[in-house]
Length: 259
Image (cartoon, rainbow, N blue to C red):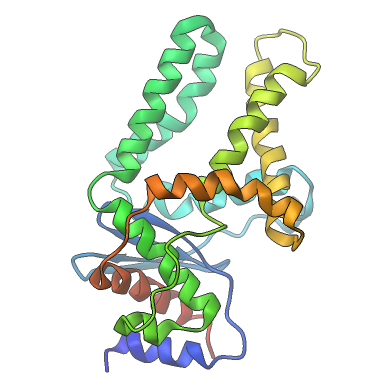
């Protein structure tokens, strides 16, 4: 049996498994735990690394903890030695930070520039096979949570390609929160106000995200509906080979987590 499949078999019978997240790339899948990340490429390559460990005080401080977690989730892509080449890291950083500068411009130029940069970022992230690998990432993580790793590896099981913890769901929450904050927060029209509104909106969204993820009440789960609907556009049904790419990344992470 393949070494990855052996690890998955061991994980299926483990008493406890870590909570995993992930990210689809055009050429592979990133899987992360709190301590480790692994990238499995469609070409059979495998890269691994450690996740950053921010100060404990920031991880417990309301609002700040959400921003820290958001930045940490991007570490495998944005840090030197991660899964993205230097040129792509700079492109993603520009696409993420440029809206802050555009907010100071105002008017139609700001709106048009923001839309253009969003499209560039989406194209960068979702090009190539990323949509199918995004579905594979969700399926692999669901297989962990359902303890169906081996059957998913063989194709006997096909967990859902839709995930309640996907970043698409977070984006669907962030848009209305940012829109509301821009109009309701009592900031004076100073030059730094757009930056404050954006950062605070992301922090508030992360706090709402924590409540939605931890609650079992149907009211909070309703906040996931728009994001789950958007996943019909941001994911495609993966092949078994693509699912196995994601599961190889899962196995690489669990190799450090399962005893």
